[in-house]
Amino acid sequence: MIGRRAGTNRAGMRRDDSILTRFVDSVFSLFRLAEFEILFVLFFVIAYVIFKDLTARPEYNRILVEKPRGYDVWPF
Image (cartoon, rainbow, N blue to C red; front, side, top):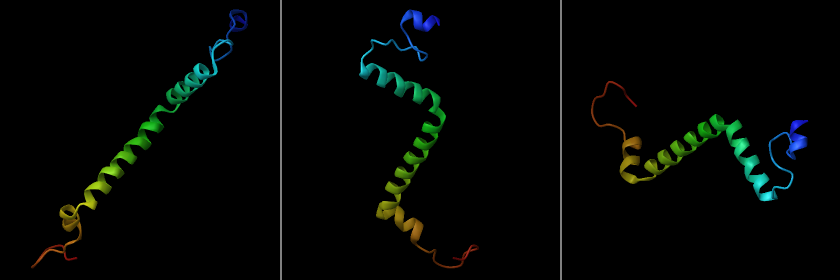
């Protein structure tokens, strides 16, 4: 009831705020709610992009693809 008397709703936004302000506030509240999940996914996306970039270069790709010459303890 206090929020209704003060002219705000449950989320703390005023009724006379612009649509853009309400949208930005809702995006920030969603980010605060799912911050860990967003950062977790972002970490794997960045790691994937970096690994993809490294393996696309011929000098690094040769390391991953070439088979070693001579006797080796770990045969391929």
